[in-house]
Image (cartoon, rainbow, N blue to C red; front, side, top):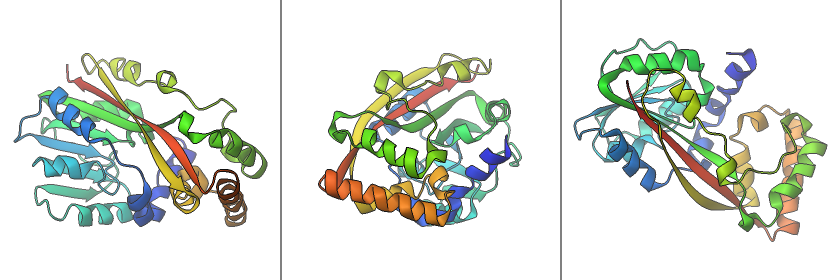
Length: 265
């Protein structure tokens, strides 16, 4: 893992409460599909890697599962513990997954919600496989930003502000992907040689923001958090002005939630 990635993955801990308030959750259908496709029994045990504030944990806890959550950020772990206080069968452990001493053959399902990409895959998949029982499964899911006609061109226009005011955040000038263009994780999982057939599901949805709520969302993204204060203030002011003057104070962002499930070989 590079020093830059190591630094970026810790930035969310700076804004744990805001992260909990504004980061989008996951469609309810996803949790039903994870339970069904993983074939986890009601008394099954779940390991969650990078639980954040527990946004994906609560739905599984509500279904009665015993869960061990691993979370690197101490502030995120504290918020997660508060959010999961009503579920005594859930434990949140503040430690990096790489440093966690593997409980071998102990879990029926390992999940990770928009977090697994922060890990070194050569370590993470092997350690996950060791933690699973012989019939266990891995379920990885992400929220991806995709094109939606409902955005009315906002994300194309805001790119000019990125190029002018925060060029370090511009990775390329490609348009937002459509659903079928989102890069997949199936090959990466299969190439480990640790898991069987990968089952893929996706869930398409939109979310609407005003200028304040959209800036709050941006304030939970690692790259935006790493901007210096003056640059971020100027950049965010320009985005708010664009939303309020050109888009009637409201924008719509398209999401595609992707899910990958595979059983241990």
